[in-house]
Length: 341
Image (cartoon, rainbow, N blue to C red; front, side, top):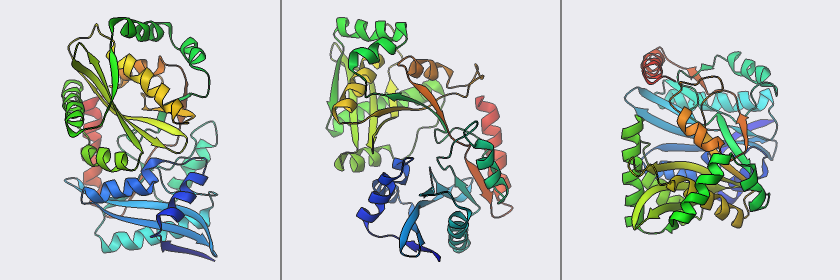
C-alpha cells in the first residue's frame, strides 16, 4: 500500500537522497533550512510502499508578485519512477495546495531528456496536465559536467587550448585564489555578484546570504575569491553535495578583463573539489545547443573550455491549478522574449 507521510528525521531524509544516483542539493535537508530562513514554508514528504521509503519530495511555497506556487526543484526523487508513486504524491501535494491557495505546481525532476527516454518522460507529465514552463533552463536542466577523477595533468590536457593558456597566464601574473571565511569576504563576493547581475542583465537570486551561512556551517559550501595585486577580481560560491561540487553563483569585475582571474578561480575550485573527494564538477546551467544568441552563450563558452560533457534533463513543468496561472504564464513569456531565452 502506498502512503505519503511527512519526514521529520534529517538522517532518514539524507540517507535516502544520497542513496539515489540522481540526487540534488535542492532536495537536501539543508537546502530546506535555507528556504525556511528566507521565510518560505516547506513540506518534506516521503513516499512509502508499505514500510519502505521509496521517494521524497521537498515542497517549497513561493509567494511572488506573479502568484503563489509550489516549487519542487529537482524533485521528486523516486527510487523507481512508477506512476503509482508519483500519482499518490501528487494527490497529497494538490490537497496541501488547495489549503494554501496555490496557483500552480512547478516541478523539475532529474529525468533524462532525449535520446535517453526523454519523450516517454515528457509524455508522462503531459498526460497529467503539466505543461512546459515559459522560461526553460532555470534549474540547470541543461548542465555542463566534468569528471574530476582524472589526474590534474590530464584534466589540463583535456581543456580547450585557450583555457589552459589563461590558467597558466593567471599563475604567471600572480593571481591568488583564497577561501573566504568572514562576513567581509562574503560582502566582497556579493558586491561582485550584484555588479555582474547588473552588467549582464539578470535578476539576482534571493537568499544567497542565507545559503552561504547555512550551507557553510554544514560544510556544504566554499567561497572562493581571486585576488590580483590586493584587489578581488572574481568570486564564486561552490556547493558540495554527494559526489558533486556545483558552481552555483559567481561574480567578477567588469574591468581588468586582461587578467584571467575567473580561470584561476575555477581551476582552484576544481582542485579543491578533488581534495574533498568529489568526482564530478558541475558547472551548472549552459545555453541550449544551436542557440548562438542565447544570453548565456558567453558563459557557456567559458564553462565548456574546461572540458567535460553536456548533461540534459527534461524541461521543468507547471501544473496549473487555477485560472490565475495564466497571468504567471503571460508575465514569464514576456520576460523570456525580452531577455532572448
